[in-house]
Length: 139
Length: 103
Figure 1 (cartoon, helix red, strand yellow):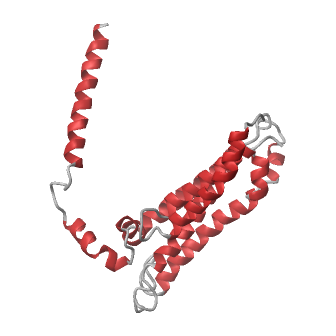
Figure 2: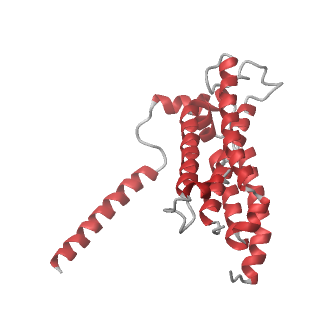
Figure 3: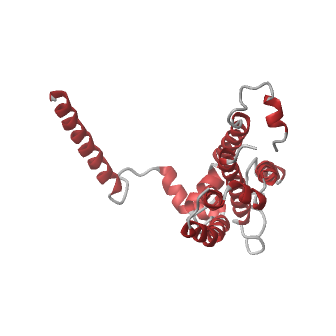
């Protein structure tokens, strides 16, 4: 594959910052614009930039297919588990289990933070997995 | 030729109507107020803890909807894994071999 120096350099320099910005959107989704889905898509776009510029083989050594699929399924299971935690605390499925705790000890938004991070990891892993899987070279 | 002109006039009319609708919708306050909106604006941050009201709604009040969206993505990934067979290997009888080493 022919590749220009500009594409090579820009993708190498830009992709880490895109991944970092995606993580920022995940962790600050409860107080500023952002959230799980948006942050996950930004993470996935960083991965997509990497494999469009550097090739799927090189990117798959950094984000292996197996760990991406495991992360996707595992984050979904953890999300359901977090929902069941709300059920166990008496707030209903997907309710906020720490609503009864004193706000000064545990901020009430920490459950939203957990949901956001889990959804973001799941969306990022899922979308980058799909795109990398469609773009991969024939074995 | 004539039909094309009529279509163009109709397109302009539709565009103007859409522009009027958007202008009305974008002018600050929505004309009608609803009980749910007032409740969300007043109590949303306090009840869920999220300062961002959008997050307060989609992870606090409508978390089932969010769970459904993640399930949709899970199903999409499953479909891509199932259907994306490498080119030239799709109709072979070795169909199962191409999928054996998938995650």
